[in-house]
Amino acid sequence: MKAHASSILLGVQDMDRSKRFYTEGLGWKVERDYGVSVFFGSDGGSLVGFYGRDGLAANVGTSPEGSGFSGLVLTYVVRSEARVDEIMAEAENAGATILKPAATLEWGGYGGSFADPDGYIWSIGYSAQGEDQPYAE
Image (cartoon, rainbow, N blue to C red; front, top):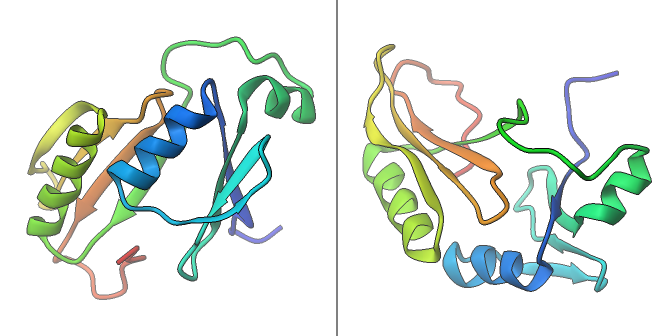
């Protein structure tokens, strides 16, 4: 198995709320909307989509119940500290919960994190230390 995700599916409680957060709040474009699932334009990266939480849990054979930190963090690397700040502000204005405000990180990078309406954690970061970063933009 290669170190690559063909798609990332997030189980959401309220499909309409999640679509509004990502489209109106963060500017994502819906590529395919099947009602029970929604996929966004990937701009060359892994396909990201939503699926109803109960249905997604049933598809993979687990319970939809759960709380607290899931052990999953979605990372979004950008090319400047200013862009980190812009994305964090967009997310907060869209209704995200800021978990860690953007600031200089102990290892020298710059970043912050937020949780979307379903609690999925996004880490937004920048580092001038490497030239071969997995930039999202």
